Amino acid sequence: MRRVFFWSHFALGLVAALFIFVMSVTGALLSFESQATNWARNAAITAPSDAEPLGLAGLIAAAEAQGAAPGQTLTIASDPSNAAQLAKSRRDVVWLNPYDGSALEDPAVAGFFGWVEGVHRWFSLAGGRSAIGGWLMQAGNLVFAVILLTGIVIWWPRKWKWSFLRRQIGFQKGLPTRQARYFNWHHVLAFWSLVPLLAVVLSGVLISYSWASGPVYALFGTAQSAEQAVVRDATEVQAGGGEMPLDQLAALAVEGLNDWKRLSITLPGPQDETVDFVADRGNGVAPYAKDTIRVTRDGSSVEVLLPAPTNPRFFVRFLHTGEVFGMTGQLLAGLASVAAAVLVYTGVFLGIGRLRRMQLRRRQTACA
Image 1 (cartoon, rainbow, N blue to C red):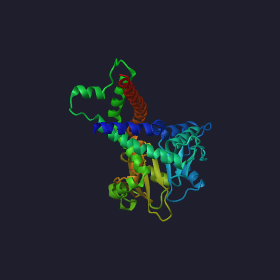
Image 2 (cartoon, one colour):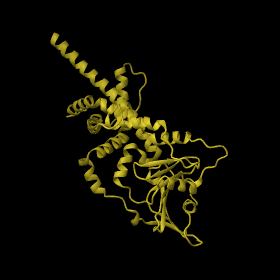
Image 3 (cartoon, rainbow, N blue to C red):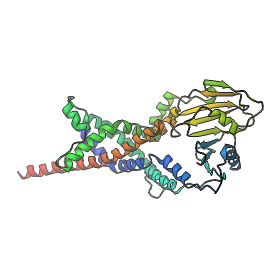
Image 4 (tube, one colour):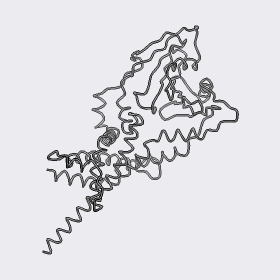
């Protein structure tokens, strides 16, 4: 039975090697896309001489000039010299210059990452989407999931001994041949990258195929809505009466929070009695690093809400990139992607070498 798993493992790997390798390399490049793009965007901002950042009040006015509407989200950084983001929808986002409120162009690196994403998702070297390329990459990822599972069966020892395990989990020095080195690398990298690779690959399967994701989403349901939010902590504030400006409400929301990196404001409508703020201490995605604060329009009450259950679609989407676990998750996903590329290369080399040796033995037997 182990022999069947081995040849299935190798045959599937050989068929899907190109697609898995491309997915792995591009996935590694995309690991810190958001951080790299934000850094490039902020680095390109030139502060006018003797100019001060607009501050929240000025950015709110700039957002309104860009067509901001109630229900949309304005996100500011704790560093006032960084760009602010107006999210009108998931795909309609405007970045604002913190000094004059003008709309910022995307940095050149954003175009590079867009191209990398096109290759990663649709196998498209020319950019844009490709139905056939997308199907091939999705199928390649599904095959990769099977390869990982068969690899576990192949690797699993008949008897657990430290002498065996030591060779499988640690790099060995002084191996005499390239085949021996690659064999060692293949097993060691597979062992240490298995868990993050399973997370990345299986979440990719859920993203790609409704037959896989449907039962999962049905089982876990949807996240708690804002109306169902539970208050964790509430503070009554002495208010002067009347509606307070948003920048003053924001100051109340982050009072006592010294480690926030960005603050998102859900722009209120005329009839809204409260304003919701989200103070983020992490990478902008990880749920555990966010605090949702609800402030009444007159500033008389500040409520910190208990985290709502994470939407399973959101969790799966950012499990694929590792972002759901913060920068550590991103790093693990990136390293696992690099390991996957090496696994493909070493696996193909070892498999082809084995086929050649088998062919050579047949010839020798035939000549004998």
